[in-house]
Image (tube, rainbow, N blue to C red; front, side, top):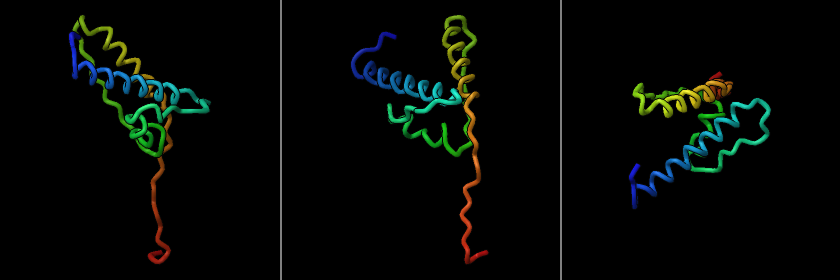
Length: 101
C-alpha cells in the first residue's frame, strides 16, 4: 500500500483486529467448538453479544467488480458465507414486574 509511519501502524492494528474477528467467525460457524476466542482483541470483545449472543445480526459486505479487486471480493464473499453459517437463537429479553401483573 505504500504506507509508512503512523498510518502503517494503524493499518497493522486494523488488520490484526480483522484477523481476530475472522477467527471468532470461524469458531462460531463450527457447531461443536468448545472455545470461542473473543478476548483476543477489543473488537471481538465489544462484538461478543452481537456475534454469538442473544442478538439478530446483519452483515453487509461491499465488493468491487473491478479486476484489480477480484481476489479481495472473493475473500469478502467467503467471509460473508462464514458469517451466514452462524446460528444465533435470539429471544426477547422481557422483564415482567409482578406488581404490574
